[in-house]
Amino acid sequence: MDRDLARTPVRVPRGGRTPADTRRSASHPSVPGRDAAAAVRTLVRSAGGAAGPTLGGLQRAAGNAAVGRLLGTPPVQRAKVFHDPSKPLQWKHFTGAVPSGATHSAATASAWDELKGMFSSTYSFENGTYTATAKADSAKMNIRSYVDTGSSWAKADHRSSALLAHEQGHFDITHVIGERTEAAMKKVATTVTKTGAGGDAKGAAAASEALDEVSKPVLDMFDAGYEVNEYAQCRYDGCMDVGTNHGTRAAQQAQWNRWIGMGLPTFTVPLDDVEARMRKNGCPDGGCSP
Image 1 (cartoon, rainbow, N blue to C red):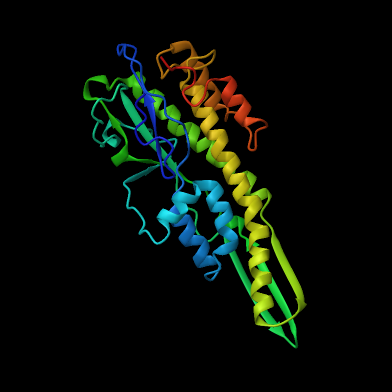
Image 2: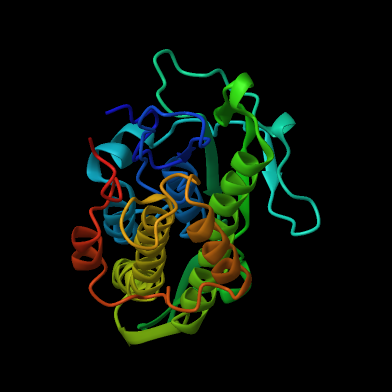
């Protein structure tokens, strides 16, 4: 099965096909963009170089290999169109080349923008006592959804208004789940302070420990939102019950348009038993495998 760009930490295209396209369209795991390299650099920078306690969360988020590969990699410059309800997607935003042998009609590379400076830590010592403080700053937890135009593409002869509306739905889902994930992250944001006897070394160790304590719940919520978006996108494109079968089922597409307008209330962050729900519904391909 064609899965171009599937399960990358940065972006994942959303496949769709027009009713006239009788070939099976690819199903892509719907994972919001996670720029792991930028996240690593941000956390290391905000922690004053104390990367150790934050890498565990990043490894959960992007995988050990991705973290190891991306550390020190310069940020990738992308042509971004940010989500704006008053400015829906247009076909001019799909500038990427159609992959050779692609069996589906379009791909929307939606993502969450880089989050900078969410975590910080400091420590000091005086008269034989250290004070270490770490903070998860909710003001920096602003998830913005965008489409990477250079990685989004559409076949020229399949560019119908119905297909464009379906691709907009993928973008809208990424945005809605992003907002819900942001709210969930902010709810668990906290500040931790540790004091004790000791000098510089113990203060630094305490700051590192505190940083881990404040970052873990936030990154866990980010992971939870990541999984919920994956699940929602799978259900949207899927071939089972409420799935649109990549936009070819008009009634189901209309229902999803209504649900998106309502803010997808059943897709909470976190969502219980996401993995079991995905298995039940044939994800990641939504039951659309040949």
